[in-house]
Length: 295
Image 1 (tube, rainbow, N blue to C red):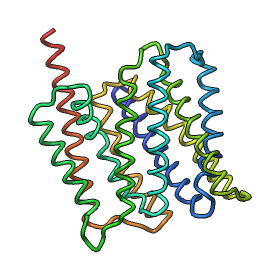
Image 2 (cartoon, rainbow, N blue to C red):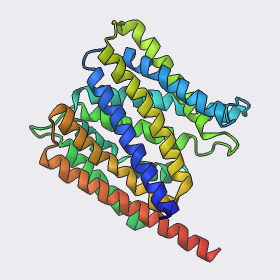
Image 3 (cartoon, one colour):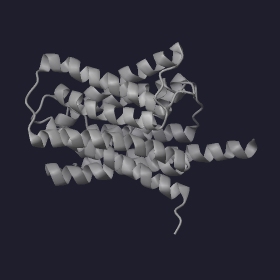
Image 4 (spheres, rainbow, N blue to C red):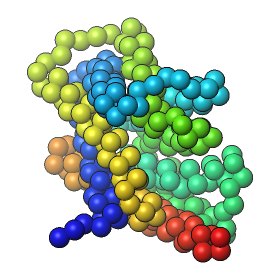
């Protein structure tokens, strides 16, 4: 039986989210016993090798770009470095599912950021959904309550850095391959790992730790490839909502490997964030279809 492009795209997106969440699981486990920056540097070597080989094999390994594009990639890479430090530091101390629930607000934040940065038009329906989604984030974090986890603020900070990361390359020339953007960010994160290791120290790596870091690097590369393929195969409006499957994987893997389940308030907040995020994506899809119909 033939599989439609949309279904194929949804499967690739689900695989991408699974891969990224497994990467997070490996990183959370290994950073309990190894210095954070050493782990980032070692994972970075694997990811850089993987991305470089893919870029070379597909004929996209090229560095001829304008100064403007180089500056935009540098800005994106700097934002990626900040997002990585904040996210992985929070991940060391938080439940996997709780942090994943906060990260689910990223599409809403990107939509709002595009409106503020690029003056994109947002109707009252999407703006209402975004505001309700941010209420969900507040419920997850629960400031002022006994269950408040200060590390969640780092997770929220990583969302803001991701918004800058994603929006910074929006004006990028179409001639610049996506994998070169990822390669630039990977090199910056790797360099940050080496620099931080000079201050944090370096420890011998056991076979188990090496396997965890290797698994993280492989899954990070697989996640990137799957996400790019997903967005190219199917309709974005159909495929994009499947990115929220990462929350389900985070809950499952957090329970299996760390014996953690998110508290009720985090589940309620996450449900609000996911529901408003999916609504926003579907609303954007409908508006694009209406615009094409009028053209």
